[in-house]
Image (tube, rainbow over all chains, first blue to last red; front, side):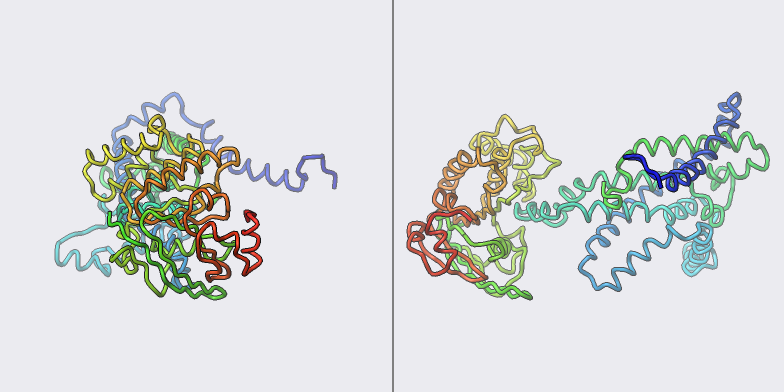
Length: 269
Length: 237
């Protein structure tokens, strides 16, 4: 096979280019077919603005919850290196499950746990008259379920590659464990935490399957932007395209924000 | 600080590694811990600081250190790569200990200002560790360790990370600062020049046990092992 001095074989280049085209062309189609003339009008429609605000609000809250719960989980996972192999792998597998699980399955599972007749949900209803499914809270829980692994794995990667001797140095200076964690460990993995939070936010913003299953699609309360986009596709395709562009724009902004910090530690950057 | 003798006597057994060390260092004395790679020098420091468990005891005067957590031991340490916190300025690095111990901000500021002045790094106070030289980082690391007024000072190869051109100057500087420290100091090094310039007593560790114990001057006559004979000839290893 002929190869130029620094070139790559056509056997690699051709499928690589087809692969790249497959990733890019759908987005090109979206941009080409966008109703550019009426896009502002569509986005400014009341129900669209409502679902946009709902999406931004729920995704922000979901990210906050993921940070509060996910960072400690990442610490636990990173420090599990000296555990026995079985619990260590089990912990990692459990955290990774929502990443590979179809979101709709996540939605069904959440219903079975927190629905009015769910394992925990029945008691929540019996004791406190609390119903979670089909409320904004359900939207947030669905987002947390699918997005938390992104944060955990990003932070864990950063923790594993950070130099633990800084923590020892801090301890010799009289810092308690909590002080070391707050003032040394967390700042050192700061880029990993922000990358994880950004990924978590984007994943929450785009959440569809678990949301529509567990939270439904009530305008104003549970109809997030992806759900509105799906529904508009049947009613008004132009609106669906405009909303898709909006979600694409958010994704691009996040990508620019992440730059080369995409999952530090996992990619070795 | 409680000035007192540092009294170390312990044994540590790991697969393929058996370390038995015993020594005492008086207040104001500097003990050099010499030995080939893997002899257990850094592990000894790690035991004193509280990062490695062992069987035996570590005391400073009447105070028992074993059983205490690292942050309760009052053992200051200068690490080989200095380990200055990269996200903090020089000033914040030195203030880290006093602030972590819950000291008042105003008191910490006075302590830090005095140390910045004493170590000649006042001009660098707002710089980050990445923006200062190796010699400067070494001084900041020592200032940071002394800021909490430790009972004992441990130095792990404090000059090894420096270029040969600046090492002489930094070594002379370090000697002055060590003379001013009232507590016991343990210095781990490979360099016979470090020992001569900085230490008053020497322990040589080989294969997990002490092969020489005495004064720096006495090293010249030590000949029990090939390593000691090399040291006696004044060769750095």
